[in-house]
Each structure stands twice: as C-alpha cells, then as structure tokens.
Length: 184
Image (cartoon, rainbow, N blue to C red; front, side, top):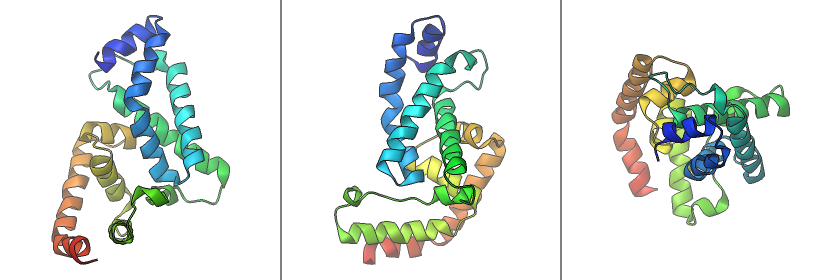
C-alpha cells in the first residue's frame, strides 16, 4: 500500500497500520542514524525515538500538501533527533561532528576494504558541510532531491545546484578516487 494511503488510514484511527511504515523504513532510518552516531546502542535508541515521535505526531502530517512525502518526513524527524541528541550530550560538540561517517568493525571485513572506506571518507571530509550532506543523503541513503531539500530546509533548486557542483568537484578528482579504489 502506498505510504500516503497508510498515513491517511492511521490518521483516521487505524494505528495498527503504522507497523507497515515501521517495517518499510526502520532499517534505513537505523543506518542513517548509525552513520551519524557510530554507536549501535545510541542508534537503536534514536531510531526508536524517531518512530515513537512519528506515531505521536502523524496527525500533523499534511497529506493534502503537494510536497507531502512520508519518507522525507521520517528522515527529517530522525535528523532532528540526532541533532537533539548531540545538543543534550555535549553542548560543545559541533553539529558537523555527527556528519562524519563511521562504521562497525563487521561493516567491512577486510583490511583492504576498511582502508578504501577511510580514504573515501577522508576525501568527503574535505567537502563543505552542505555538499557532504547532500551527497551522503543522495548516494548512501538514495533520497530524491525533493526529499533532501525538505530534510535540509533548502529549496529544491539549491539542492540540485549543490549536488551538481559537488559532483563536478568529485568528477574533477575522479581519477584520484578511482586510484584509491583500485590501488589501496
């Protein structure tokens, strides 16, 4: 069933259908949060908080809006939960700190793979904050430009421009990235 139809039924009182949305998005939301926290327990807790908040606030989801997109809405909730976590955890932590991508030991079993990932992540760390966010959302999380623009509170055109410019920047260094994959 389409997300918006499920949301409408939930808003009409059939809360048990929320399980369908949970099952559809829980793994992606967990991965999204884990990449920002690099801690399994924290990611699990924030994932739970995200879905609890979504269920509690589903009545505020506006189905009639043309831009209504449940996927973007749930990612925005997760994004805000991660920001709130870092605000509470340590007032001195910079918001950009949670954008550094980490991975569990079993994420990549070989030393070669880990080295390649570290090199790619080091390259991405050289991008501006918004460039990195757009690329991570687009590539790692397979979100549309519309969804990314909603999450980051930027216009759709601006999101596309940032992506285009960043991809040109990355393309200019494509040989170096390819070299990292092939050699290291």
